[in-house]
Amino acid sequence: MKSFEMGELIWRKGQTISHWCMIINGVVSCSFIDEEKRDIHIALFNENSWFGEHAILSEKPSFGNYRCQVSVDTLRIEAASMLEMLDTELAFASKLAKVVASRMQRTSEMLMLFRMGNPALRSVLGISQFAEALAYKSDRPPTMGIGSQVSIPINQSVLASLCGVSRSRLSIVLHSLENKGWLRLEYGTIEVLNLPTWHAFAASKRSLRLINYEPTIDELLNDLSVCLFRLS
View 1 (cartoon, one colour):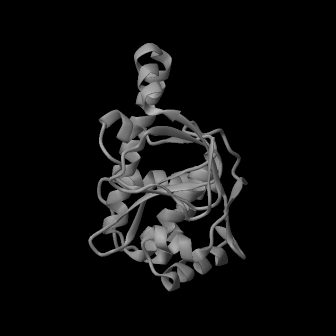
View 2 (view 1 turned 180 degrees about the vertical axis):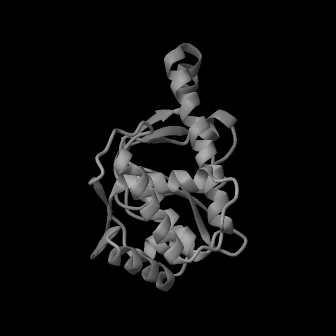
């Protein structure tokens, strides 16, 4: 087991990954810096989530920066042991293949949205992705009731950086969402409400063939309301 402090890098982009890691407690993000010097968040990992398999399987260095958003404790398996399990454990290999395929699809879809979307879209999608990862706590989400909620244990400055927007722009979006009852703001924490609706919203954006990359916050609020109506 290995522990890391808040803000500490587990791996840097280009670094060789020697272990497959599972988060015992805490939150880890994967991001990279784009040509405009923005920190583009592409994945988030929470308790019971494994990460690092892409680099181990491809035998290539890490494609992103893996940073702790809070204090993190991890359980680590050496890369060689993981590869041996792939050769000898069929059930493990099958499960891992499904997880990798799902993550790759979600990452590519979300990356396109984050790179091309305006600040409002990046902010709302960033919140939805954080909420999904924190609520599910694994790659096989449980069934949740419509009243479910989860707290994002990071401050607004960190969230703005991960969404690739300024602190002031994120603040405008957060207060608009709070006014409509989609979240609750507290010091150092953002409590996201109606989790199934947020999940449906993110899934709908990922599945669209033609996407409006320049929506207004009012249009995004309406999209959330439509998802809530469809779930009711």
